[in-house]
Length: 440
Image 1 (tube, helix red, strand yellow):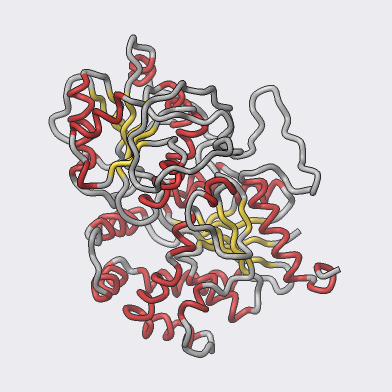
Image 2: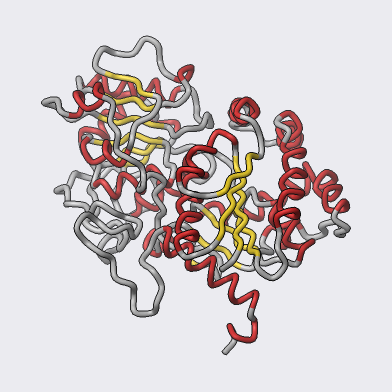
């Protein structure tokens, strides 16, 4: 049994998949502590995990607002100023101290994000502890060199100052340091990996880890009534963060209104919601997507891998308005197989979105296995003709469907999803802790 110290930052799509992996590690007999934003304290504790807050709710909301101001920023100085204004350097020091204080020699594995796991890398190096980095989407591994360059140009002095407090030398090769974990685990399936630039050699793939698979499908009465109506509504969501162009919601709402369809607008931040809304478009700050997505006619979303995974699991057509971060790459991987419509920002018009909604994308019979073998389509945004919607399973991430059990594969690895990810973390820890045994 290991002690797992897991650090994760971001919004629902970043934090909650880690919580599911942490829960799977707990189920395998390990002790798990999650370090994250105070906003997620209840979600972590509901999963039966220990929790260490790295900020306050007010500090987290400030961080989200400030991060939204970085949309389109390209200068290293902007990146540095964001870190300073959001208190992220103070947070880095706090995380390193807490990891050190909870570390138990010979029985601890550190787990962090491939992109934002600086504290686990510093602590692992100082403590000579095994470290595993999880990546939510392929782009996060593709972007490591660029992220390393940003840290070198904007924050080298600050990060090296933290390292000096741990008696560590300055980082000389930032790309090598950012890729220095003992193992990297990708939270997506093999077919999705092969649809674009593949993950670096040695990356282990766990399959999609849906954030809400364990959530209770508690639908508000108003949403229940809309979903039971004569016309299935269109669901629009840009995730739970603020990293969106302002016209994302305005254009999507205008498209739904032009079609005369009802809409569900799920936006955590009220100030991002168009005002006024058309009579048939209804705003909710949160809905249980596991219960909602299979019952809507289409999902218009930002390209977050959690949302697209949920739409695949629900057998629901997708229109992706992708811009920034991993989103265009995620969208292009689905578009290659014709299972989503992808519109870049210059086509975020009511006319183009409505046209895509009129011709729904195909869906997958088995999202875990992916599309049947065929010649991939162009990676550019596509608009093909509609095909018959196929039935989808209730689970895309290895969780047993109702009335079924999921057998273990012949090689002993659990099925794709959080259980597979937990198994891969456990295996990396065992290999690092017992190199002689792992080599036999």
